[in-house]
Image (cartoon, rainbow, N blue to C red; front, top):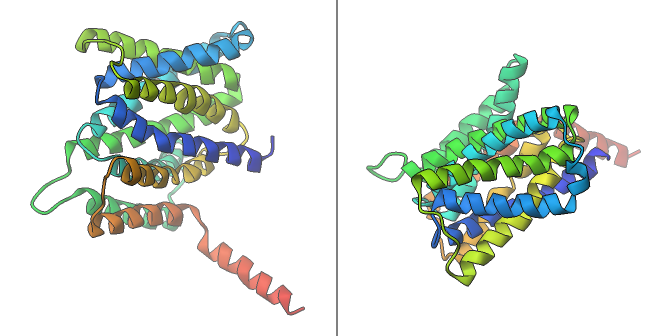
Length: 297
């Protein structure tokens, strides 16, 4: 598969995940956080497993090893975002999760021991300033829900990096499915220990669980694992920066959420920081100059 095709798949997954904030918010109206995670990933694992059961029969130790790591990261990520959504808005959560695209190159740099370039540092400063404007209100500090969303973005960044490595050493479809099962089992254990597990008691609750399980998880995470075999973690993270835009639009349209002027400025700074950290402005300007020069010849 060529990289542009892999990037298109990542873009499709980004749209799926942009809708997930809305469905998670709806699901939390009738279910406790970890209970919702258990149902979501249980549905996802069963659905994906039924489609690719022949693949799963060939599972080996490498597949199981990487699936356990990725499943643990997914569990931490979704527990954090669920806790965050209980006390912050859908749009806020989406923009804070865009910090993933900043965390990915930073963590990649730490693992490879290469120095951060100036663009990345400048992008990080812009994004942090945006987060401050987006989340901090007068006479208050960072809200617990916002902090949970940032922690979730960190978990997701580690997950993207590990998925990139895992797909080079194990079967991408098998680990994409098995990680869903690991997440479901962890969530089931925790919901039995700390919550009162139950099924949704409304039509909207079931729609939320099925949409999250079938589209956002079964389809989304399997496609992510397949696509990341043919593209880089940093490139994946950049495309995922579009996710909060989808989340914010849906939050405003369906949840009647609003952003203040300060919030819009903060969101713009976050996205600007993300774009600035990844786009080589000098190179783009050089390409434009070459294009202009060639138009006169």
